[in-house]
Length: 425
Image (cartoon, rainbow, N blue to C red):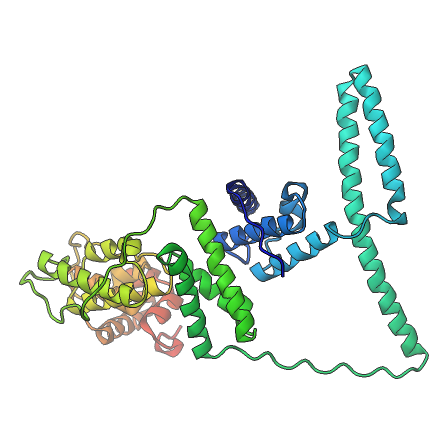
């Protein structure tokens, strides 16, 4: 293969502009694409690079309307780029295109004539006709491709009608997926390429890697998958450099393993935030976990700040929140939202009123978050006690006079882990 064309800053800016225009158009049309914005930026970058490789001007190809389809994956969009650009860079026009060329010369002559007459409206019409002719030339190529495909189909039908034996097509072998060890090697290659070029792993890069792994390379041979993943890493490098990101800080080294404290270091009662002496140990553990995973802690400080400033119901909730934060970073998820303790509520009968009121709010997604919210208000109940309160209140039926009367049954079954027969209609 030939040498990859070198993209200028202008090329990178144009690719970024194409992706922004298409993405904004999808948003205005309320279209839900199969890709995320960074993937679209990579496709636009690939489009510009392939245009230069084929000697085409990317500004002469309608990327937005001829290539960018929201219903395609990144790999499908790349194949479409190859198909369109291969057609545009094909052979010179043949006899079928003579009529448009003749019309083109007529328009040129008309254009010269109307310039002399200074009739600018006719000049504009002539230019529009020129653009129509260019589109027709592209359509002619597409029609010729379709015609050839139909000819091959007709020949196959004729052979069958003539009684000629047609060998049955072999069943395609089931695609073999990459093993877990090969996936780990691909992730190591991805990280190593980014560290070699940038000195760090940019935020959201690992999320892009996992999308590429599932959509494009999961069933490829390892050697081909490695090329695709390395190309992905280099695309991210080009994108980061185009954004003018400042050079990374030198890597942080951790001398020995650091774990979060197993018990509170402050006598302050819960619910509360971390004390200053606890924050230092959690930060050291945070740095150790990320550096051990090949990540730069400075790139994920918003995750740590959200965890540091959160209110926690007890020490078990603190440790669980820390582990969830590390998992979120490694899997490319954004920082979590941590609820703050609310003002005391005028509940009369505790813990029943508090449990039923919290369920009526329908803001908690699982039992753990519901229990933590109750603890924030000083209401300490177990999951089994919550289920028992709901079942007893539900038995009242039409006589029920509480928040539970306005709480959807489906929500209760989901959050509490109950069966439909536990809350009979």
